[in-house]
Length: 416
Image (cartoon, rainbow, N blue to C red; front, side):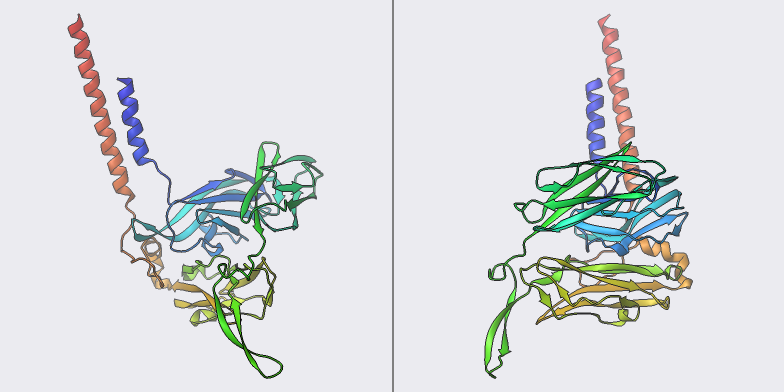
């Protein structure tokens, strides 16, 4: 009988317990002040757009806490988020990924995802990066600072032999830092991923090392889109020249889609990465915003050049002047160079105070997006059905167990 009971429970819970749309895996659930918070986001469904820094929030008692998030998309199913916990920020917090549009059975839905953690009133260890991107022959420095009141020993381990470290142990006095130099093996393959673990008493911290390899040669016509342009030379003659599209957004599928209430008019800031995938430097780059969304977006820096096989970063502020009014702001973030142009769609909606009482309900419903690749549907998550289904199955199991026990008792009586 025990075998049948275990079998039934196995079938039941393998059917009910499954991965969430996005799993948030924390390095740990208890942090110290000034430590580096780290979360890995595992994506189990197709998303309508990549997760970006504007989707992330840190909340305490329902209030948003301003924080400088860092997020790296390792692949379509894996993101790494990290940030340094400020001093004097102890207490219970909620880390959230907000209003993510995803597909389930070809139907577009929207949800937010949450994980709680606690910050203890005690200083910890801060690490400068959660992800390091390295090019061929490049050396980068990982900075680790000891905010504790005593000296600490940190062991350094790596997975594989494709990266070279200048030390495997660090002794750091209080209020001082130590630099770990990291270099990639020249034989590493493009987009190869490796890991470094920093271990100290009862804690550890993981850093992903992502090797970007060498830029693809533009002499290989299979690598890039290209077009023919007419060039005027110094002698006044015209010639034809083939140019290659080697510059694009690091995440070409990115969209910025935000819905905010009037009480969330605080400044949002983040960045957009632009990658040169080729083996030639690119100059004369134009970055600008179109549509009425340019009224609330500020581009903070110029990007005049992106070196071969490297990343340029453009920092932007949303609603820097706190002057956004209720309504929809739409447009595109444009990358323009040579004869090529790429864009990221932007849609930001501010909901007026008169609608704030319905704001949470609106956030849980599907919102209309643009440039959809699959048709939307007005469907809401119904977790109640799952719970009801589970209860019914549990009742059925209980009945089956009782029947089996009853029959066995009758068989035992007949044997006497």
